[in-house]
Image (cartoon, rainbow, N blue to C red; front, side, top):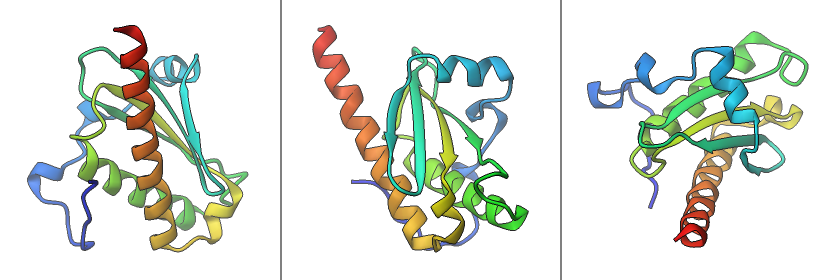
Length: 134
């Protein structure tokens, strides 16, 4: 089951170092080519297997969909927190999370439930792909 978090500060083992971030346009481009897709009314998540590397996260929260900077930052914080807490279940993926317009008005609990559902779906899709290839 995915981890639940009480909302306190991140402990050192829950850090978000550069090694778990998508940093370059090339990193994002690779994810956008033939991704595994997951989504609902709040978020769209694209993922691509990255070999044996640790999972990496990229955020693409468009100003067009979430107009105010504080709303975009809130969504990013919630997604990063969920990613940190669930990294062990989401292995070997490069992931890009994009917000839809409805995310701007969603509260923290709705966003957390949404992103947690996406992690579960991605894990199921990966297991299916692995079963097909073996």
